[in-house]
Figure 1 (cartoon, rainbow, N blue to C red):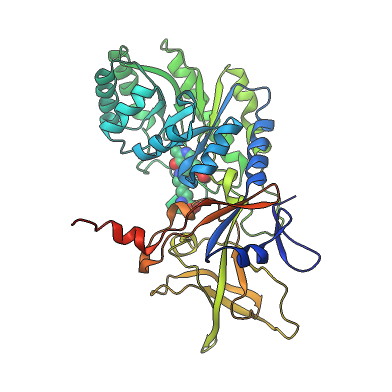
Figure 2: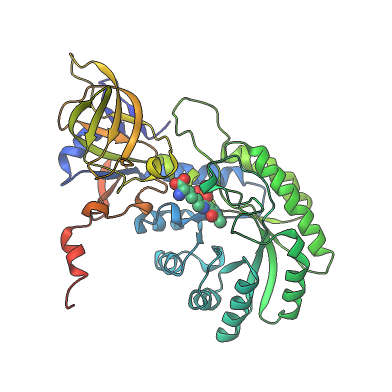
Length: 420
Ligand code: LLP
């Protein structure tokens, strides 16, 4: 059962709570509304799939960095995947076990690598200069850093070019023609770094598990080659990237079980520990952005529903042309006719849309309208463009609505100028 569903009364519910009632109870819109139980269920699906394997699930915290959500995932036994020093600091504050943390990125800073080295998190080597910095960080703290080589396997993930990362011309990772150089460098610096595995991340929103299998086959070949040179590799990290059903068409998409089952035999055959780095598939479907309709207008042949949410709170449609499902939270008025609408915000540019050409009943002013699957890469990518302050967040926890982040205010903004 999914956390957001229509009740028999025609209202939208989140885990038994009417979204309309939440709108009336909270102080402002738009706001993000999550289901805590759905987060738990999504994590359990990975745990279930990984039974019988040694594994680490590292949640890619860039997808959603709400501290309460991080603490919850940590309590469930999840690790964390980090791409900046501040993500590392936040993960440590949330209490993640450093031995279940992986520090990724093509531009990691020396000061952040020093912190990573001190705490003992896994570090993915992305380039020659990155390796040099990791060695320096290890010397600074006097500890040997466990590293994985991020290999760019040149597998096409068949997704939007902005979220494809494992093609040979992408800025991430190292190409196989340089592999020997890196292995020699690791040998030279064996007192500073300990090569424990290999990593790849192909891209995001992947909907075919064969793509993961193709990459895992290539990666296991690399592992064989590297082991043949005397390295004791333990970890295969296949990154994140599993897509979700944004279109709500009921299409059968691969589950975590399908994903893990396509690589299970390979992992067992080499006696490896599998690391996976899911972001979207853990958190996207646990949340809606809840908005109020400001009004409805028509220009020529185009109809618009104008809402109080915008590209500032949720930029994926504007940035990637991404589809996120939209619906009204209450049943339509008896005389409401269905038309084709663009759902737009108040931000002063035409890129500001949440949905295009959606068939919707004409909403009343003030009606609630949700954008679904807003848990991943929505709040974490929100901006304050047009001084739209970042919205508050709530989750439904065993039937009660609990605030899990304050909304930003103009006061917060003005404070940045205090004393200047
Ligand atoms: N591991 C690495 C190294 C990554 O770069 C990413 C995401 C992940 C794991 C998690 O991938 P996921 O399971 O969430 O697909 N802002 C875009 C998505 C960018 C993904 C960046 N890397 C969007 O809104 O679609």
